[in-house]
Image (cartoon, each protein chain N blue to C red):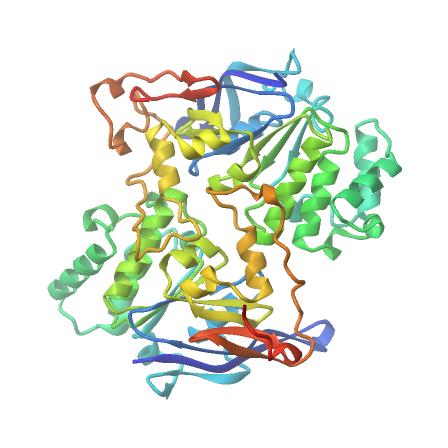
Length: 313
Length: 295
């Protein structure tokens, strides 16, 4: 198990009180595993990704532990976390357009970045990886503004994984890209994993059908908690949590026409996390809700590797 | 009442001192009829948004013309009574310091100053019901108190207060969650069945496929393929459409099988024309492949 997260609680400080964006999430990511994280906006998926590498000023670790490769990852301590960043835990940001320094040629930027971490550039390895993502080698002499969106995204992917991190967090990296570029980027991520550039990966996206293409395991979150976690094919073919089922059935697939089959969304909105409701958080929107849902459903393992937090599962 | 585009072309001046030109939309002809959704599909830079904006009169076409019921479309009250637009970002369409229903009051001030308040309220209620909103839940609220889906519906309700015939929907669901996106799409489909014509601009093929009767695929400003949605998606003929369709992530199949063998997309350097391969199904072919038969 590369990454182990236990009962992680992360709160946002606001003027009106603490928003419990992550409220007791436990899961693990194995060696060479790609974990896809899916859910609506506000379910805590970005918070989870951010808290594993850098909490911003409003975030507070309210409880829980994280371990990486068997050792504790001090995510609540900004200073102690520093040696881990980029070397052990790395991130591909959503907006690659603004991730690179616009005033430096890319090669120089990489040199400076590595020097700041006490490393030097292995030019042969860097060029090998550029070839792999089909970027020209002379790109190192160019400025970020000279690259197209897809090229920038690939460049940032190469930079983020240069030091072969144990854990890579990719947060919505394809949502600003066109479908054909999106496919290329998603496949490159898998290739990076296959070649051992990264040991394990958390791939965050709101698009379940994209996650399904590359992830080994999919974890669906709802209102700061885990709803369901299972191998990708199981989530898609036999989801057990009503939220997962409704989420998947609301997706228009190519081939589904309104005239033939009318899909429906999920009524209502996720609860506000400033003062989350007692019991199951999906209760208000759930067609299967019954008396027992007033109690918190614990995530139970219904089949090997298939965890569901629902009384009806 | 038909909205038609004839040979619409839009070029921009780019580069230092406007020395170069960029053709964003290249000779696009298209007819919209009431009760039909036409989806305009393309990737970034295909000119789909430019075309939508041209229809709305926000941009003036460089060449070609847009007519509504035979009369040239001129941006102004008479035109906007029938043709309205809804855009991608519902959050920035509202002034955050005013209540959200102010967008509705603006319609009354501009278009219906003579209508009595009581009658106007009835109309608001009806149009909110038409888009599936509960008047009590949205009236008197500020934009931040409403969800993206609610704000988007409110904008559609606002347009419905007019004598609306055509709606340009430019990526209206791309900022919404999967759970609410489908509801907005279903709403468009319901309005369509009641006679509204919709130009549905999107980069998402599955959404275009879901609600539209006709699909138009744009590539670098040119229509590369157009026709009935079932034909364009079920039997794509242009290499670009085939490539797009093979890139869409699906829940039914993984990408594992590798890419289908697709001939390289011909960047139309030479002259090319739209050829009718099947009834109503047009595909762009370059001059030399004009005679190519479909197997």
